[in-house]
Length: 107
Image (cartoon, rainbow, N blue to C red):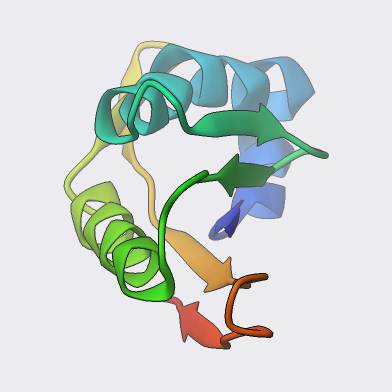
């Protein structure tokens, strides 16, 4: 699964790169960790892009996870420079087991 923070470039312009990183480390990373399983692997690729590998998860389970993360992401607030910022994200899925599925969730 790929996850990308919506409007991250504007956040970087407004708060600078250190502020945008603070936003991700101060709340977004905790959101992902708290909403994924222990065996799921979460990594930050570049800037606002994250990958989530969910082993032993079928296509339906991965789609359920992506939908839940997408829905709950809009309820999250992360702190940066004394302000609480609402973060939304877009998600995309791929499934090796069934030869690939395409699901895109975006705000």
